[in-house]
Length: 130
Image (cartoon, rainbow, N blue to C red; front, side):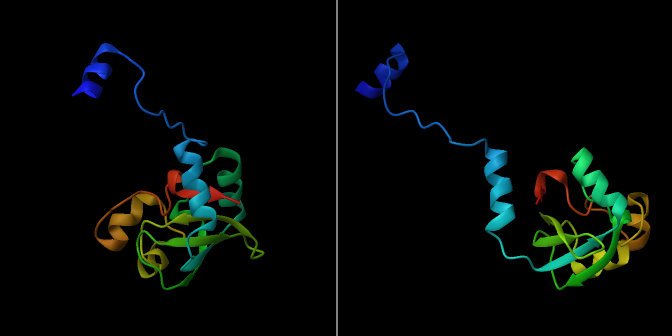
């Protein structure tokens, strides 16, 4: 009761914990190094450029190759045409769905799969550039 009264009066009570990093930066660090990738996506030069220069989400139209057996929400490595790792991210569609969507614009997702969960394969908030 005394603590509640002190807080109510505006007294300094307790310990203030200030994060060392912004939550988004910590999430990106976690994505980059703490999770085991379950597959990879190879992307074209245009997609590499858009990811690096604009910080955009990864769309299916920029994907030219899919490897691995990953599920929705798992980490995949994103490679350029030379096989260099460009990024990592949490994918919105599983490997089989991604294979069907590869190279297609977002406007065709429903036509190809029969439903749309997300317009992008990997949302920019779930993607970290390396």
